[in-house]
Length: 243
Image 1 (cartoon, rainbow, N blue to C red):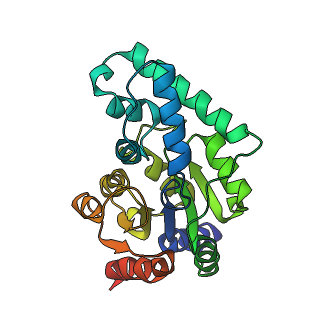
Image 2 (image 1 turned 30 degrees about the vertical axis):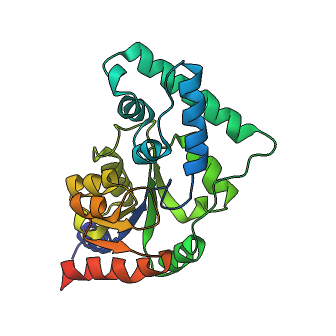
């Protein structure tokens, strides 16, 4: 066998064996609802509009900002001027909160740090796909010293809003992973729909911002009740493909 053929065979085998775990951020890795709600309230007040309910704000977590503002203010969904004003006001409010001297970073959910260590030790490649900006994502990961676990960071700066599959497809391409070898872990129906559209497995989590019925209705195969259940659920999903 030639060296070229041998190299091709080894490369194909490695790619076939690549198992990729992609995490959402807000509501999955960290609990960011209070910061998001505060920024949304500030943005709507700055634009002279009625403030949406906390429940409504939690429902839009995961969407890109312009899409989120359209959902929160449906009467102006077709008015780019209003949506852009809300988006800019939200960004400014979020930046002000994030850079204030007394800002407390979004806390990790229990068990997340330990599970990232465990999954990495098992040989999985890890990535993030989030509606956050790259600046916001890097700030959170660096604050919690998690950035080195992830080989791919996909954010709303460079992709259409979830549930469009572009973020997940980009992560799979960067990791050289196939859809059937990829698990998307998230807390919203947008995450589960994105997983389905990309051909990946959708693994929902119960501790985030959408109800379990919403996750199942959007295609979640399993729902983890705590971070400590993630490894066994991942194994179950991936074993179903190979069994």
